[in-house]
Image (cartoon, rainbow, N blue to C red; front, side, top):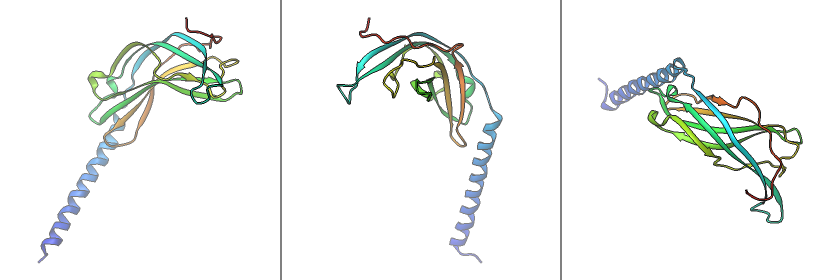
Length: 178
């Protein structure tokens, strides 16, 4: 005859094994539902201005301001295992020293399928800055809308929803906002 502790151990072992098998099946089944989202991205304006840095008030730098038109339908990315989406707009360019840069200029967390349709005309959330402090002799930037699907159980998946058709040149820096 088994004691109550041995029986409790056997039941909890069976229960935890069943839960782990179920979670593994959930994680593996998420790979069957690979949906692609479509969208369009247009850069309305890109302006560059001279500015003082916050940390070093005697140092000058150039800051880029981007206004964009974005429409994307991310509802196909939601299934029963999707917890939330992290959506971000990034600029990819090569600076004067030949270093490839990727800068996030806007982001949003989408938690519900009802909020997964994005149609906005907006300015950047984060200013566009280069470590060198200047956008002169910088190659044109390519802008893209990317997303990260965060599931309840399983691995993160990444994708791209929209991209600008052609690269956009950085204009010459101006001294004042006008």
